Image 1 (cartoon, one colour):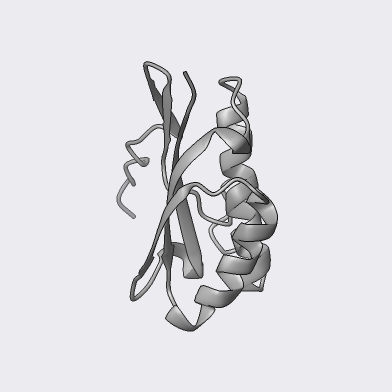
Image 2 (cartoon, rainbow, N blue to C red):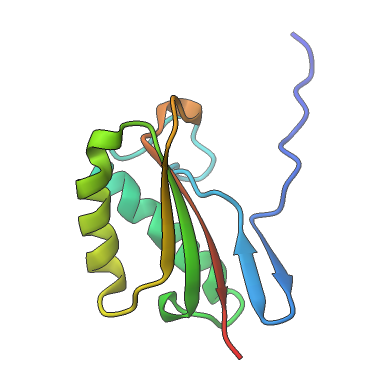
Length: 118
């Protein structure tokens, strides 16, 4: 078996007052399969992972400016939207939801974010 090259990316990058996260899959500790079974649980896990990444830079979910979610089933849009609304509450970051054919490791969703404050 040939050696596999490890992924070439950073979990997040800081530029000035902005934090750009890589896409977060609903995986726990580098598991190679989606951890939660439902789209709701997968969405929440992705958002919690983003929250943990930006917290390392002193930011909270209220500092999220923009998210992009990739979903493998457009029918899940409503469920994703509900979890997203519950997670962010009154805070409403800009958001894109993009349907895709397939995500890595059988995941139903992947979310990336931009966070920052003055």
